[in-house]
Image (cartoon, rainbow, N blue to C red; front, side):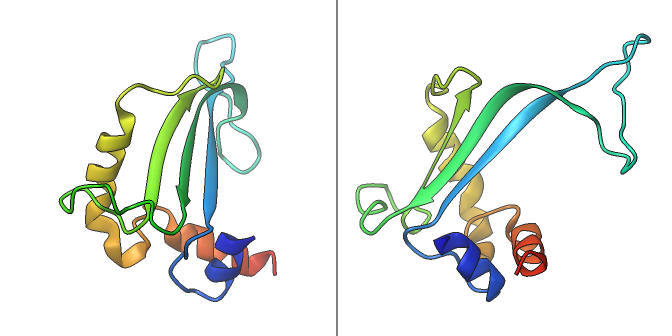
Amino acid sequence: ETALAAARADQPLPDGSFLLVANFSAVLGEDGNPITGPDGHFLPGDPVSFTAAAREPGWGDAIPALLRNENWHFNSFMADGTPNAGSQANCLACHVPRADTSYLFTHAELTETAKQEN
């Protein structure tokens, strides 16, 4: 709710925000190619992995300035919930340049979707 409220107001996502993205394999046709639905998107198959982003007060304090994304922590997990080893530093490094969009690559899409659901 914290992230959605900020997104609806087109504001940076504050502490207390939590995002979870589920990544799925594509359903394959008999020819081995992905099947698309009426919207042109691949039909989702089995879950492959999950990506999580969350921020709470003070979470960035122990992270070196070079990698700090305010108070965000990021990680990815296999479909069974096992964390991907070492992905936190990689995630932080990749998201650092996105400071202008709450350190997120999908802030615009999140804002657009949140406003439509309001």
